[in-house]
Each structure stands twice: as C-alpha cells, then as structure tokens.
Image (cartoon, rainbow, N blue to C red; front, side, top):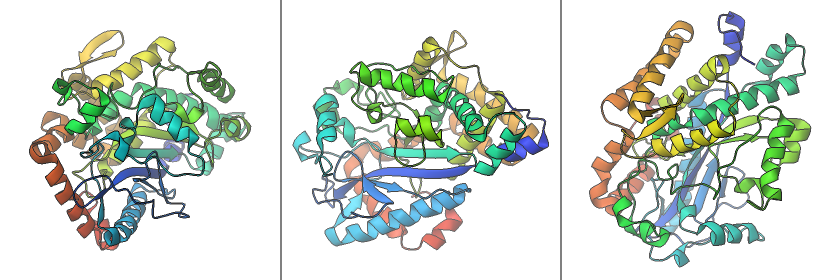
Length: 426
C-alpha cells in the first residue's frame, strides 16, 4: 500500500499525526546514589515506574501537535521535580545510570506481584534494566484513516492495519538512521561495566548504549510476518510458545505495534492496530526537556516519507540485517558500516545519502519540514550529540550530572515560559 504523493488531498491527510511520549528517568539522591524511596505517584496515570522502583516513567496524553506533547511532558517533569524536592531527590538526566555500589541497591518495582520483573532480573540482570529512554507513540487521526480508506474498497480497520504493518516494517529498516542521529548516551560509569561483565576497554565504544549490542535485546533475533495483523500476532506468539520469552512485553525491539489500551495481542487481533511505538530514543541531556523538537519533527517527516516511498515487506534476512544496522549505528565510531542493498557503507556516509534523499522529498512536497532535515545534516557534518556530550561530561560524569539535574529542576518552575524555548539547552 503506497499512496500517491502527487495527490494534494492525500498529502494533507498523511501530514496530520497524533503523538504521545513516554520518558523514563532514574530518581537519585543528592549524592547521585539511586533513590531507595517508594514511587511517590501511586494513582497517577501519567506518572508510573518501569523496571525499578526508582525509574520514574512520565506518560503524556496524546496530542496532534509535537509542541503540545512536549509542553505536557515538561509539565509532568515539573510535577515530578516539585515532589522530589521534599526528599532531596533529583531526576537523572542521562540514559545511562550513575554510579551504583552493587546490583543489590537496584530496587525492583514494587507492583503487586513482581514475579515478571523478578524473572527479568534473573534472566537479563538488574543492571541493564537501569537504562532509560524515550518512546514516541505515533498514529494517524481516525479522520485521515477513514478518508484514505473510503476510496480503497476495504474497511477503515483493515486499511489501518495494512498501513501500520508496512510502516512498522519500514521503520525497523530505518531505525539505524534514527539511532545514528539521536544517540546521546556515550558515557558509562565503571560500575555499569563491572556488574555487566563488559570489558573496561569497551567503555568508550558506544554512542547509544541502549541501542547497542550490550543494550536492550533478547537472546535471539526475532523476525515478524507483516502481511496481516493476525500473521504479525502469530509470529510474536510463536516466540512465547517456543519458550524464548514468557510474554510479548519481553520482546525488546525498536518498533512495536500497539492496540488501544493495554498491550494485549488479543486486542490487536480483535480491534486492530491503534498506533506505532518507536522505542530507540535516548534521553538527551543537551535538551532542557530530554528530547529536541526538531528530532521529533524529523521522525514525523521520515514516517510521512515512508508512507509514500517505503520498501517492500522485508524477509527474515533483511529484518536481521536491520537489527544489526541499528547496533552498528549505536557505535561511537561513525565509520562503522551498515549494510544497505547488499553493500557495506559507513553509517555517516549512509546517513548523509538518506538525508539528501529525504531533503529532496521534503523540498518538493513538504517544504515546511526542510529545516529539520538541514538540522540533521548539520549535526553529522559538525558535531553529533554523542560527541558533544562526551566532550562536556566525560571528565566528571557524576558531579556534572548532578549539577545538570539540579539546574534542570530549577529551570522547571514555569512551564509557560518553557514553551517559548523548546530548543533550549542546559
């Protein structure tokens, strides 16, 4: 299902979008150690925790404008910071954790019945679960889906499923590009390496630890059937049935297709796919909010581009290649090679080529997005986020990290003032 980019009405429908953000951040004490206090926001649907009791997760509402979703995320961060002042705690601003003495000081989230998280801790280790990031949830408005489906001869549900399945497959293949452009976790404390059995010489190997070979991955490389929602669900269920994972939630993958409400494969089969979750964004300590507006705008443009110009559905080999490309793009060395169209090419060169293609697409059809592509090109031609972060913070990660967390808390007093400086840096 590839749409006609020369149709003005279709372009207008596809350009619309709905966005939600989920941001994880560790609560730390004033000395940088992991907070041991209970999660202070029970009953708040917008503020929960993930694997650790001290891993706060802020979940925005859904908005049809990126600036509005960032505004809500900032408001949630202000709310969390305001509460933490009383306990002398701070939100850690990096995806990679601060120093911790032993894994025993990592408190598993105290949900009623924590058997699942105990299982994860045993299987993958508690240390990896400290890694935090941002998830972007994207969907087209129902009005756009209904209008696009009306001339296709199929139901809006089937149209949406087909569109999102193809888009998810394309986004997996382009995940390397998103990772390369947004990687922002190039600094590792020695405690992380020590208790993860990672050689000390690998300390400076990664630009994004979460997305690298030592990050969030299962012990196998999954492949999915994107031909229908039922086939997609069955391909996930097969890994549960084989004992590779005990739950679909255990499937660590850059792109996830989600139903409305809780993550339940039965809901996907019965009610259809509601949105796409992109799970590869690092917390960016250079941004006052943890993510830059122009990066989210670029991801939206990439989605629009793929709706019109995406690839054929990938086979198992291409899916495995896409995962490996993502891990390569997470390396600090931008000469690392990704494999595209059967050829190895440096990630920096590949990114420049893809960006030029997307730039030409935007200039022709969506000129209001040209600036966010130029922003990405400027990054790869000058200094990446990872390079800048390492230059600013590598020499005193803990001390500077705490100063940054305190500065962030002080900057959050007025969410309305924040709205005028969405690209601000701390």
